[in-house]
Amino acid sequence: MTTFSHATVPIVHLTLGDNTCAVSLFGGHVLSYCRAGVEKLFVSRRAKLDGSRPIRGGIPICWPWFGQLHPDINEHKLAHGLVRQQLWQLDAKVTRLDYVSITLSPCDISHSLWPHGLTCQLIITLTKSHLNVALHSNNQSHQTHPLSCALHSYCQVNDIQTTTINGITGEYIDNTHQNKIDLTPQPYEITTEIDRIHPNKDNPLQTNIYDNHELMSTLTHTGHDSIVVWNPWIEKSQSFVDMAEDEYKEMICIETALTQQFDLAPQSRHCLVQTIT
Ligand code: TA6
Image 1: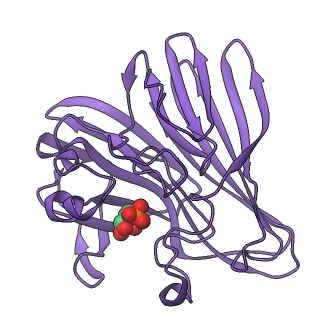
Image 2: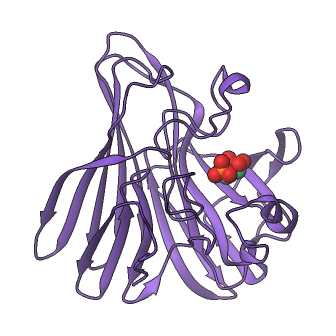
Image 3: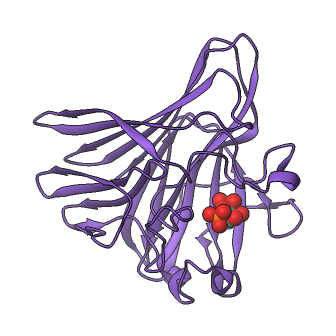
């Protein structure tokens, strides 16, 4: 298990047999999921674990907006919302023979951009066969709120150049080419920078990551309206202070997301779930 012993942010460790998970309270951020000793998530060796910036890797929680999907983004420039760069609190921990589960929520909901009456909670459950991450949104107000969010998972791969993704088809929105609509390649291989939003409401949707023909990980998605796939490739990863230049080869982001103009009705809830095995 990766212990992140150099981290100055508080980390919660979950263990069930030979399966482990590490969660930073900064951002409510899953840093590691090891299934039978095999690490499923990527964290940059240059990731900041001191609370000074969002953590590069693991599962960033993008909420209550995804990416640039906020009307005032050009003023505040807070990509991916308000919660990945603040402290979360541990609300509960449940330990049973067949699972360990923790519930987390953001500590500070006072930001001027925080939608009135909206709250979120993260429930992380480690079982013998998988890690389940559930982002619960709750609209306790009497007005409808636009909501976009994502479980922005950095999946570990051996080599991006021998990696293929299975389970994603149809059209996608290409954020590297002015939101051009294009068709998902089959096989889904990555040979350049990609930043794609794949509209998809198949609930559940299963996506598999292969290295050559070896299954590396399976991600199951529910509650989404899209799957985001991202790899910064060489040039963009070199521009990141918190990513070593060759690390683009070791990761692929496969994100369970709401990006398609979802509105959370008054007095209602939504749950976005990603399961990794
Ligand atoms: O999920 C893809 C994306 O929105 C990309 O556009 C890229 O910005 C990535 O997220 C990482 O964002 P970050 O703010 O963590 O550098």
